[in-house]
Image (cartoon, rainbow over all chains, first blue to last red; front, side):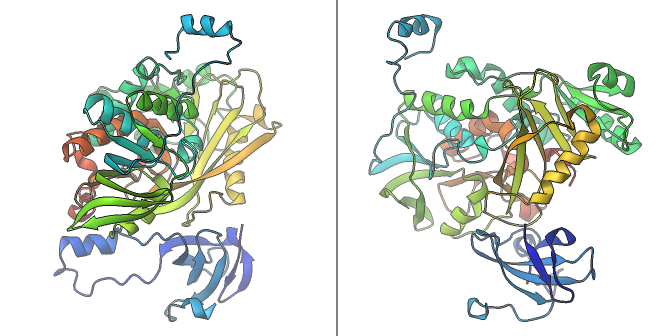
Length: 94
Length: 413
């Protein structure tokens, strides 16, 4: 089990949080114009790396705010947590 | 050597020391017609049906660990086909039909036990759901019985019918049950090798060679190999292999765990499953209770689930069966399951020519093993999916024709 550092509340137990999948996915600006392939990619296709993963979490039983997590999916180690809208960190940032 | 009563008696004279190995450890040849990546039940079964029914001669199965050591050996062995949608019903019932003859077909006892499965309903909504699904099952020729509270109480006398979430009824599939998971991998491996399939263990694929959009070879930890067609059946690592071939999948890999209790005398002669309170349980032939529930919600390849999920499994179990509350749990384990957005598998072609994929079985792949292997073998042999496999193409995520199967997960989601 992890301890997760909420960018707003600090370190809390993992059971206070829930995970909501890959982060940094941009909705197409012009949904009516994109092809079925592009829309399908946006809706369903996901990076599912064995290694560094960027994902969205919410602090359900705390501040209830959304934030992003950079985590290693092999060791489950959390490398960094950061606020929505912040720049996606690189490996050199952790 | 055929497993038979005659051979059992004959080998007893030499104290059972001269049984030949069920499968050998051949060297990787430089070239194959078909290579299946993934030596679980689905992969080994695919190789078996390719050799037996589709006349492919030169086949290898590559497994990075030992056969059946992934999700085939990490599930709760439940088999059923009471799915809602026609597409799923056809696929999973094809599997149950094959399960029924599997032990004699493979000459290997897979201990398929059709002990019946009760899917519990705890609310008016649940009753409506099982009624709808039960009638859908009737129409698809799948056995289903909709039971009321009294009938369930009579069948499972030690279940607490009046807990916080009372049991109001159940959907019973009598043809459902369990099988011995390791035996499924071993049985397919032995039968496939008897048909000339090379089973290469401890051989991890590190790269996929593609030329002009067609797969031509593989780079493995045991050297490179040329190949005409490849079938990917890697379960949790599907995205990793797809990445090597240069495409992505609509899949997230998450941990799913299960656990067994200390062995006790026979007490539960059926499989119990509840979506609403989130648990499923059966008793193995060794006497252990085999308990499972939901997967973790975050991506991971760690092969271990989070500790709090265990409490989420145990709480509904002791609520339903207070009699189990003082049992000790002996072992827990995790597998990495490849979950699709609609909880239905992906079987068929990929953007790379002659590279086929069978993945996305998520939390419920074991039950489908023979059916999945059979339809995938036909897909690989003919280059096109058959009528059963066709709705499960990768393309459905572009067309929107999802097979949105809430019943695919054994639990609520």
